[in-house]
Image (cartoon, rainbow over all chains, first blue to last red; front, side, top):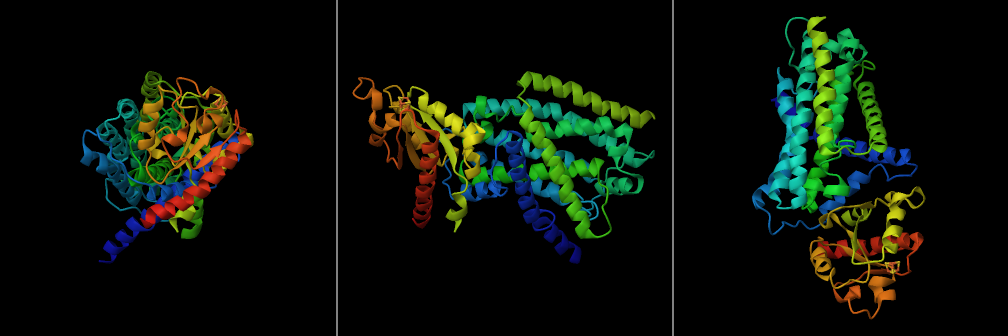
Length: 318
Length: 146
Ligand code: SF4
């Protein structure tokens, strides 16, 4: 009974739920400020994305007349949202929270990570808009390319954490291993996998140069094109959670080092690391032009996959 | 309560109804150059009319663009604010009395703010947007009472 209510608390308030949504939205706001500063502008207030979500609550929701599947159009945003809520619930935060504690949660993570893209594809393709159709085909192509990298990196990390006797598919186990033996980001063998994972992260978050499926300049808003009001707000929340999930996964895989013994210190350390990663993302965002979809596909199939395989080879044979 | 925070995030949408492009250039520069950075006010240009809160209409509404304008305005969810940018949509401006003009804008929709000038100055755009935000706040309140 106690563990059940603790899980519900973790799912709804901390570190999932409320905390994750607000922290994720703040990180998005921070990214916008950082991009503005790199471009010599002042930028929006840090709470901007929170205001956006509140604003969208006050707007009307319109369902297009020529939507091919109205029901799917309305429920599509919630797949991604649910997936990300669950993902943040199963992810451990080193020194603060142990995760949901399933023994092979790494495998669950592969499926959960794909859900936001799935909800974009469902929502976009049922909206009946041409822009959304183009965006959906691009998203599907990209997804095909970057998921390969993710799976290879994940397997590499699992093997390395298994330390010789098979792969370790438990997130908590990976964190513990690194707390005992030093973070993987210090390990030369794992550096290529780290770079590959960062590229995967940029591609999933669709920051430039992988800003292909929702590029304002050529497909307008892509799959969000026909959404307004509440469902659009759900997409915003999903995006915030996705950013937080990816950052947390990056920290679990490569840098789960502890800052001290107490929970508060570790939580602050986790938040500081997240902020630093977001500023890194903003630097790439502000300085890159956009790929064409075929260029992005070629790049994603060659560079990160090669780097990830290199790490896998090093881990397997050294 | 909500309206107080909601007005901090006005999303702008531009409709060009056959303008000479002078006003559109001015609109682009207000958002894109550091000096008049409107992202400070939370503004953001959106690509889709369904995300828009404040609609900026430029141009004298030519016969060709009339039907698109009407359709576009229909797609913008309430509560919304319509701003006429430049002298063209207000009165026809230099194109007034031309055979191909169907304007002014207030024949089609209730215009909330008129920002005049030919072309408009960036400062007056900012002023117009600020006024539009004030009107929008009242509209949100009314919309949620109804
Ligand atoms: S108001 Fe003047 S500058 Fe603006 S679109 Fe009309 S003619 Fe061009």
